[in-house]
Amino acid sequence: MRVLTRLRATALLVPLAACSASGAPAADAPITVDARPIVSEPMIAGRLELTGGFVLSSGDGEFGGLSGLLVEGERLTAETDRGHLWTARLSWDDEGRLREPDGWGVLPFVPDGLDGHRDPDTEDIARMPSGDLAVALEGNHRILRYAGGDPRSAPASVAVPDGLADAPGNGGVEALTVLPSGGLLMLVEELMRPDGRHAAWYQAGPDAPWQAFGYRAAEGFKPTSADVHDGFVYVLERRFALPFGFAARVTRFPVAALRADGDVEPEELALLRAPFPVDNMEGLAVAPAPGGGADLYLVSDDNFMPLFQRTLLLQFHLQEAVAPVGPSVAGR
Image (cartoon, rainbow, N blue to C red; front, top):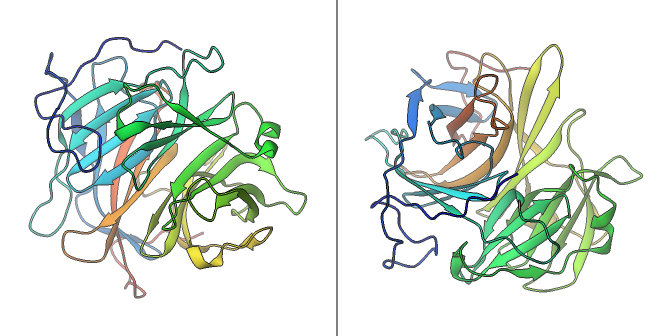
C-alpha cells in the first residue's frame, strides 16, 4: 500500500504531542469528513450506554481503515492501516453527548526504514508518559516510538519479545497500551498459547523486560485494541462470522491482576451486535466523561471499502452500577 508523502493539515489541527500548545503544521487544503448521526436515543448494552455515534465518510481516498484511537481532551487521533494519523476536534452537548467532530487533518507516519517496509500497517497507538507515540505494526511485527508524538520524526524501534515473531503475518499486535508504570502492554490477535489464551506481554516499567501472560477472549473473538483508565485495562474484541456478520465485546481487568506467566480472565462490560451499530471494530479509547465517570470511544476499520463497510465512531458511557433496561438491550 502507498504511503502518502504530502503533508496536509487544517488550520484547526493542533500538534500531536500531548502537552504542546503551538507549532501546528502549516495549513493546506481543508479536509472534509462527513459525520452522519446514527444514535437518536441512548441504548444500553450490559454496563455500557451508547450515547452518541456517527458514520464517518470522506471523498479523500486516504480516509478509512481506522485501527487505533486516542482521545485526549478535545483531540481525537486515529491511525490507519496505511500508516496515517487522522485528527479531529471533539465537543459535547450539555448532556455530555458527542457532537459531530470537526477540524479534521491528516499526517503520514515517516516509514521506519528498518526493514524496507514503506507501507506501514499500523494497528494500535499509545501515548507514552514522555509524550512520545508508541505504534504497533503488523506484517513485520514491531513497535515504533515517535519522539514528541510527531509522526514526521524518524522513529526508534522498541525491542519486542522473541515470541512475537511466531504470530501470523496478519495477526500480530492489534492491541497496545501504556500501563500506569510507564511500561507497555500488548495483546496478540492470532498467536495462541497451548491453553487456548491469546499470547500477551507487558513491561513492569519503562524499557523493562517483557513478561508473558495469557488473555482469555470470548469464543470466536479476538482482541483488537486496548486502553488503560483508572487502574483498569480495557479491551476491545471483535468477531466476524457468517451469516451474522460482525460483533464486538468490551472487557476490562485490573492492572493489578497482571502477573508474569499468569492468566487474565477479563470482566465483560458489553456484547455489541445488531440492533446496535457495529462493524469491524478495531479502535478503543477511554477518557473522562464531561459530566463525570468514564466514556469509551470505539472506531471501526472499513478496510477502505466504503461501499461494503462503514467507518463508525461510537461513544459509550460506563455505568459503574448495573444499569436499568433501556430502549434496547443486547443479549447473547
